[in-house]
Image (cartoon, rainbow, N blue to C red; front, side):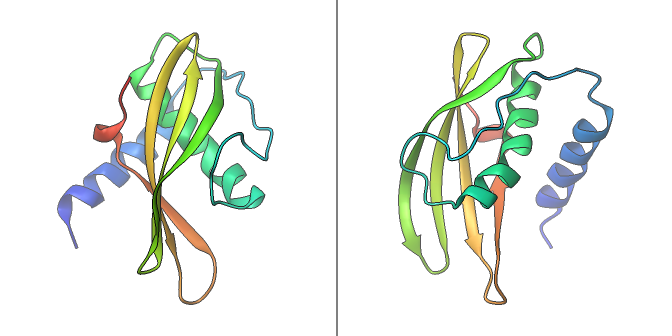
Length: 117
C-alpha cells in the first residue's frame, strides 16, 4: 500500500472528527453541471468535498457546489470530475476521481493537494 495514501486518509479522518466549525452547507442534489455521479453518490461525496474545501478556506463555513465538470470520461472503471465550490464568495476547484467497483457501488478520491482556487 502507498504510505502517502494512508497518511492522507488519516489526515482526512482527523479533519472530519476534530473540525469544530458549524457548517451551513448546501446538500441539495442533483448538483448543477455535468457530473456523471447519480444523486446518491453526489450526496455521499458532498460532505467530503466541503470538509476538504474547509481545510483550504478555514475562515469560511458556508459552502455550495455551483458547477460540476466531467474532466475524463469513464476509462477502465474510473472517471474524473472537477467540482466548483463557492466558499464565502471564493471559487474553489475540487478534483475528484470516481472508481466503480466490480462488486457494485462507486468510491471516490479527493486529493487535498490538488484542490485549488
